[in-house]
Amino acid sequence: MAVNLKGRSFLTLMDFTPGEIRYLLDLAHDLKAKKRLGDQTEMLKGKNIVLLFDKTSTRTRCAFEVACLDEGGHVTFLDPGSSQMGKKESLEDTAKVLGRFFDGIEYRGYEQKVVEDLARHSGVPVWNGLTDVDHPTQILADMMTMEEHMKKPLNHSKVVFCGDIRNNMSYAWMYGCAKMGIHFVAYGPSELEVDQEIVEKARAEAEQTGGKIEIASTPDCLKGADVIYTDVWASMGEEAQIPEKVRLMTPYKVTMDLIRAAENPDVLFMHCLPAFHDFETKMAKEWKEKGYDIREVEDEAFRSKHSVVFDEAENRMHTIKAIIVATIA
Ligand code: CP
Ligand code: NVA
Image 1 (tube, rainbow, N blue to C red):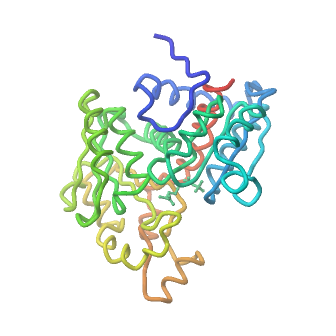
Image 2 (cartoon, rainbow, N blue to C red; image 1 turned 30 degrees about the vertical axis):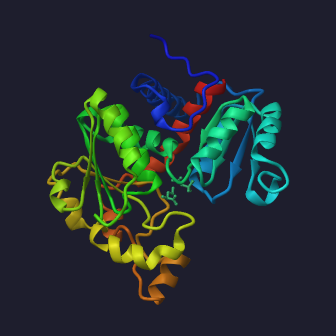
């Protein structure tokens, strides 16, 4: 059956069928090839999109901007300091106004309910640029990167996510793997309270697709991994919890030994970025001075032949372009 995503919001991969996700991945691969050939066709000519960021960003913001401009569209960027949203104007009213001006709205912030409400009230497609519980555009880019590097299809692969297994990336992976029939393992401290509702939802979906969703805290789960993935231990807004997180998550830091435990010479190391892999950032330095090593991955592993982190970063743009084009062009 033909896939038509025109007018659809992109709030979570759970809203999409495996066929629709496949369509977006294929479109992203095509758009990447076209960009390389200089063969862009202004599919977004005459379209206006707005980007709302309640949290900071490098990749997601730039990916949306470049993707839209590449195809001839226009972009407006609003950060928390420069709009009335939530302060002098309700979310509902803001959504209704933005829906009159723009063909699509990107939002990054805290609660998932905000992207849902924006979609409900604006009447135009809303794209989730990260919330506390999901980061679906990142997963699409990561799957595209896996397809570029792996010698096997997604549904024959195993992804092990190490560290903060109760964060937005871990949950987004559960949904993505469940949809695409991937074996997913969340490998982290048993003390962490993983949201059981999310796990159950992902497991029910995985039953339909041949995927598997596991939670583990011992390193035997690394064996046979095709992807070792990690993310910062303290997500945006959680910085005060760093001492406790370092204590809990240090055993799950990605090192060369951890990568070797996959027993797969072709295993990929992946990370959504930004990453703490050395002490070249203000935050890593400041915490080091206080006695905490906040690196979730060692520099050697980050720079190893297994690492495809910058391909993932590039693919944010191609996959986000696919999402924009599929939903509003
Ligand atoms: N991976 C990612 O979302 O990066 P940014 O926070 O820079 O957008
Ligand atoms: N878990 C991280 C992801 C950043 C892309 C955060 O929310 O800060």
